[in-house]
Image (cartoon, rainbow, N blue to C red; front, side, top):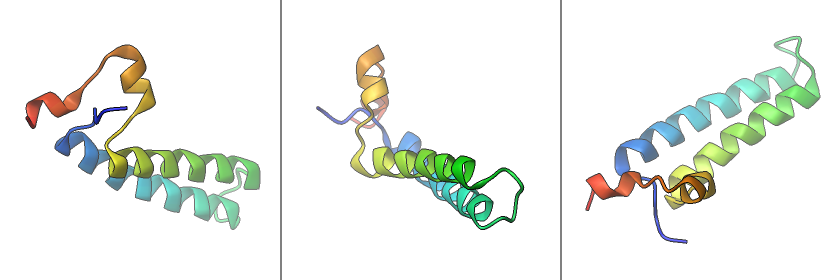
Length: 73
């Protein structure tokens, strides 16, 4: 799969991913009363954003034909 996540998109994904993962960790430890399972799901969502931002590859973007790298090229 070719890169399809551009620089701006990548920065936003990584930053939001880290913040979402931290929020999920807080939920797991009981800081929020949403439960450990919901907290784990939130951490997973954050991790997906960090991974897709780091690798610059998003399978959802590939499936719908979005490519934010075009602005970078």
